[in-house]
Image 1 (tube, rainbow, N blue to C red):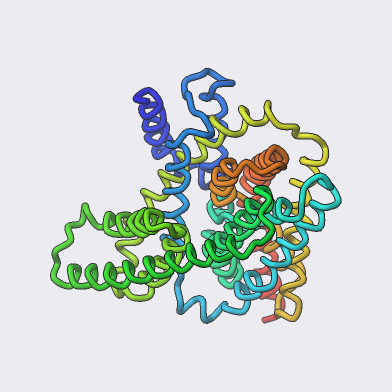
Image 2: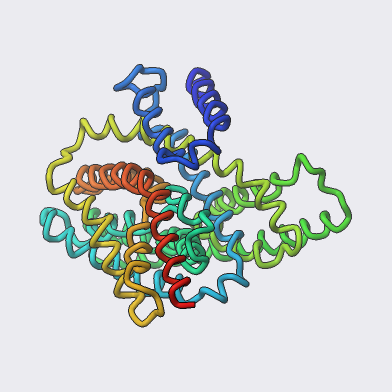
Length: 406
């Protein structure tokens, strides 16, 4: 255990020294950490001894997603959101459901051995996007603000939206696999999980935001503790809800939305102070993914041409066509719609969903694992390598177009 901790800690230290330099190039954090995880894992040098089914792996992945959900929701800038609401609203309310539906449709063609619920689970696992893989897009000022903020808001909210959808499909699939004739019990359990999550997340966020505002106004919070309240509240929402039998991810997402809207003038400082911890957790999850999932499971499950084709379709047609359709009627050129459609990288949420699904013992589990691994790895490479170059090219075209119009 201590050897694993030492390797992970030193890897985080080493990356922190060059993170800024790498962010301006073609290779980003997830790429570096994934490659490091593969090399350090059992099929590489054997430094990291990790198992996909271990409790520690699940906890790291779950805590990471809970913290990221809370931070993303807290970061939602309502003033900016109101200005660009039409874009993320269409992406989330039209594009996201269409992505899941299209994913199920292509899954039926390529994986006829999977049942409808298994295909729905796979499609939902691969629907949420990860802004970290496209950081060169959402942080690049040359990209028009509506596009940057639209993608940022979409990636910050779609994983939270997909959580109850995935849990509903999982509950129905578990009931079906167990031979139960009705899904009413399963849906009732999901409703209870979501309800508990909503209640705990809302309550803790209201109390936490009030307490933090009061402490901030009194000057009680020292600078070196500035990010800890957010991390503590995020993980508290998650863990307490899980203990009560609810969905901790729903609680983290709702808690973040409420906290961000109530905490007031200190929001930027406290949330920014917690983001470093979120980055560390995220990158450690990528290492674990490379060491304990990619290579180990790639040797156990069949990654055949159907899996690779679905992964390619997931990043192109399954993502880009719904985005294009959802933005019909929006005053944006076609290249902007294609640009938004392409930058739908799959990452952290899909990894955590994979960890959750592995323990469900579904009949089509091997196909789901293989397809998720292939899609995430392909996304890391494709989106990581194209983020900065395509952002620069798109920004230049937009600037030239604006100059011509003026």
